[in-house]
Length: 388
View 1 (spheres, one colour):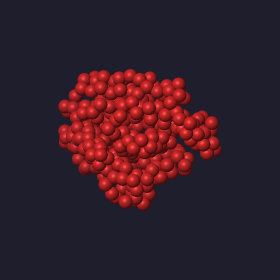
View 2 (cartoon, one colour):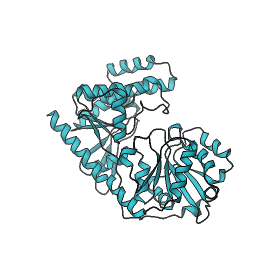
View 3 (cartoon, one colour):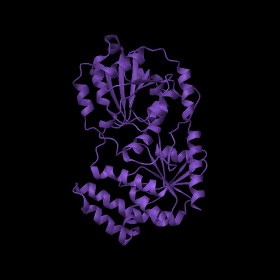
View 4 (cartoon, helix red, strand yellow):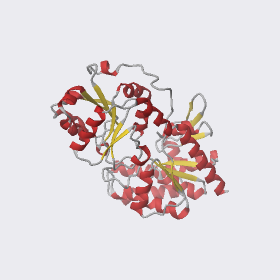
């Protein structure tokens, strides 16, 4: 989503992307924009860093008792300050847009503060509010510490959903002042049902007339795909026989989902597709009857608006942060408690409902990328104006 955001923003601005990972410099050329990826390799990392960057990196290396590989990452993040500082000096940006709060991005924030460089931070979700995100306490604490800093120093922080903003304000005891802004994610709105290329039923040997249910997102604990497998046991027999669940996303759970599927008597009705590129996902959405978001926490739920764009409704839990911005009865069915039986009931009701697919598509227009870009542009202009 960060790359997509950069592409959209570059329609109106010159965009230079600086990543936490080492990369060669190159341009991304599109029809209407140019994005330059800033070059920083190992020798840049080592040569650009100041004595203080090395000192702070060494201090963070010895501060926490973790695996050497993790501590080396912390060390590299602090050395990265030098290359980022050089980028700022060379490019002289009007504004820096930082995505996420973590030990990887904290050095970027520190350089912006050091150089009095205008910046904002976007939270695509909250790492500190979720017990299901596998991070150590000090890795989560960094989010709360920065948000209090932002509140006291009027640093703009955007979130992708109203629920995430409300949750962090309540949990961290923040003031709801003008520095916390909601800018929902957006998508390109194309003509209804355009672009289908593959027959997904045939590709995966799903009998014609059977229903495909999508569960999209990286496969790990927080996305909670395993509960969908358990809930399948509680579907009515006729739906069990004619429903296939497609899990789409990078596998990050060390085979736990696959093990759960293997132990199910309905294992033939679960298909783990792996990572599917955005362009190819069109065919899956257009072949689907339903999209399911079973996440334990969810900042926004991008798959839901992508599904809406193809007239596909979504089932999701009612306690998710994303609900306030996404819910409309024309496109979403909410599950109000988190039992397997309730999730199965929600899926059953959604599959048996008569949905107006054109109305769902029209609802997706509320989340157009054009609106998202305009909101970011207004925010950029305001920050730059206030810093002068």
